[in-house]
Image (cartoon, rainbow, N blue to C red; front, side, top):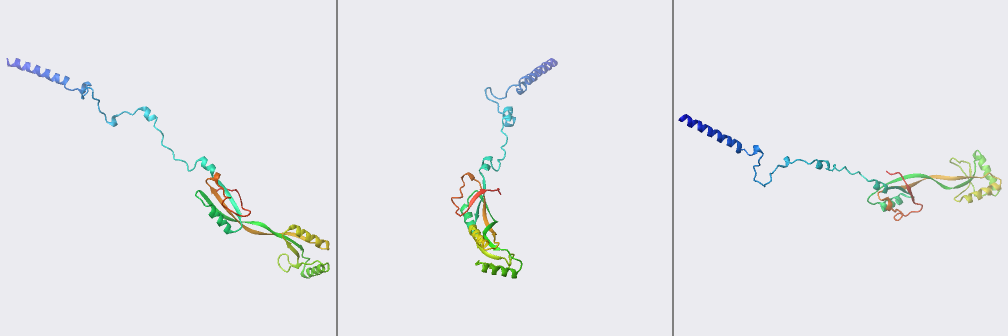
Length: 224
């Protein structure tokens, strides 16, 4: 009788354990632990990334160039001058100073005509030069000077003229009197002053409205 009772209890216990294993573990059978109709929460790290979002992500912006092509076309480089004196150059620089403009000053030298010299070449030595001068007096050719120094020593100067026509007239008079007068252009190196500019807004730059000077002009120059 006792053995039969123990056997029945064991069977009942097995049935209870089996029922618990079958009905008590919801997640093992795919059933949700939340109430019906309530969405399940997920962590952001658990969210899947759509392939389209990855493909459409814009590339990082490239660094902008220092100057666009249009801006480069607007730049203008020119030289203004020549100015007669350093003060004229400084005045022009002050008048043209503005944002977006780079400037530099420079000095150059140019050959300038100082006049036309009419003369008789040196005959050889001082005694011969003085004898030639006496002949000029005899022929009534005045206004002469016997050079005593320099690279034209003993030559006889007949005048220095700014107008070449006057120089030719004097030469012809002396030649008619029987002397082989000549004309020589006299030149010397003189300084001239220039202002170089690089202007960012070259299309709207008008230097003439701000700079005054006789003979001052402009031309394109190499940028610096």
